[in-house]
Length: 417
Image (tube, rainbow, N blue to C red; front, side, top):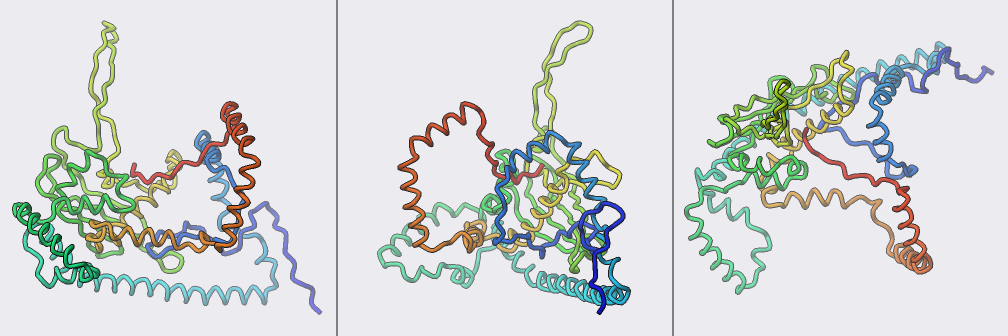
């Protein structure tokens, strides 16, 4: 009988990673799913305190990243310890996997071609929508009938008559209105990711937004195009942002996001929404007299979206630690505009799309439990509250006075820097 296969101890300290650990970061793809296993219960970690610790020690973060970077892709020694005949079989499986990867890449290429095919069919609908929004034409009776709510037929006659009277009044008042004013601004403000990026100053410029459209590139990638009417802020008729993918496919055949480029905004004098004026005191070295001057400093604005962050170079060690997160956020915003805002703009304008977004969040099965168990838990909590109510109030006060209470985790922001 042959001896059992034993692990061979490595001659150098390495992390217990498998032989085939990917050496590259996971691809950023619209088809990628955020990992998560709901059944695993982890210990409660004070993430806010940990984040604060790392924020105060950028050198520590850099050191950890450097150490982990050297361990990625290194063998634990297990594969090398296998007998030659077994290693040969492992190599054969790797060869089969390569064939699978080729088919996955072909699959993604064909999906892209299918998307382009149907995008050609969607385009006339988008053009028709834009013409109606901007007052070029009125919708046909068939289009209006198709868009009415299903429950409209079930309204009582009296309510329907009142609605018709109100409709006539509004019709008389709205005869001078062209198209649907502020259509795209309203749709963007109802979107899940975009409102936090839009400032009050931005709104005045975005009121002139007449259309948002996209186009595919000859190479893997896409371009978002924002069209504006004449306004007091910039001279551009269109402002675009282009997302590029790398030439090679990633693990699973997905396209790997590379970088984005925004077009230059031609701001009019003193109208740059990405800058704000700040008063600053200056002292003359000779006379010691002081004066107050106005200086321009960067500020939050939706239009920073067109100045995307750039991936760090391999030899750039001074890049901020949040650059990867900013790149991921910037790409996701582009995907949301491409996949959600543009195809369903009317649903975002009316707010209907939010119902589906919220439904996806509410359908997590882990958030539901049996009613009987919930009632029992509430009864137990009520009894415990009666017994410990006064003591708990005293403890809470003492924690605040001693300053020993744990910091609360702040809600994650989704702002474009």
